[in-house]
Image (cartoon, rainbow, N blue to C red):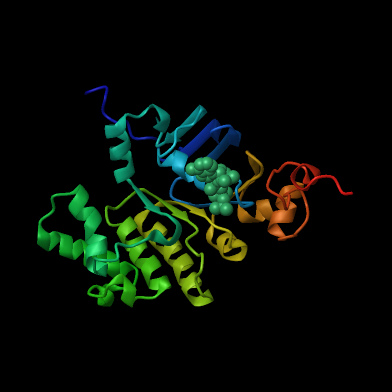
Length: 276
Ligand SMILES: Nc1ncnc2c1ncn2[C@@H]1O[C@H](COP(=O)(O)OP(=O)(O)OP(=O)(O)O)[C@@H](O)[C@H]1O
């Protein structure tokens, strides 16, 4: 057997592990010595104050950024040590649904979902049609296949983006703000879809969201990021019961607490001059 062949990680091991990860943009540190596990086959929510580094965690997992120290392991493989070909192969097994999951505006709903299949496989046209219609059916939009993105609602567009993200049967799907801007019904539908598809496909799902109620209902595992690090992680019940002051502020949506109102800045006197 070739020693280069990817070795399947044990079924009980975490799908994703961050071990002592430090990362910053330029001089600005964002994550400091961050460690967290994403259990396999479950829905993990990553929550926390705005600017705390949630999207950055997703980008590290997807290999768009590399940790400055520590390791990001996906299926036991170190993302930071992957070359371009290995990254490409890993991303094929991931679905990513980033904020508002922009669709190609000049392609129909059908073509938007078919795009990934055309890019990454050489399936015959008849099979592409079947897979696309199956994925659109899973999100309830088989009947909307001929419509253009401008002709569908925001909630429908989000569902098309979801169908596109699962077109290649990924093992892991990352959702960044899947509920942003949705009305309560579309939001409930989106949450139910994430849960149902995850169960039906045996997916590991990571959801970054600010919607506390919906996300706590949806997730099996919740991680709350504090400044640069994990403030709490566990089941939704465990996290709700956390004594950490930041988690307390967060789960009760309190305007004051450890999360500051101001982005770090020079003193008021430096910016405006001393009062006369
Ligand atoms: N490409 C970038 N270059 C420089 N700084 C960045 C970049 N992307 C993010 N940042 C900064 O890094 C910090 C973390 O950003 P990130 O988007 O990961 O936070 P977040 O928790 O997802 O925030 P939000 O909930 O508001 O989306 C922020 O202070 C942000 O300004």
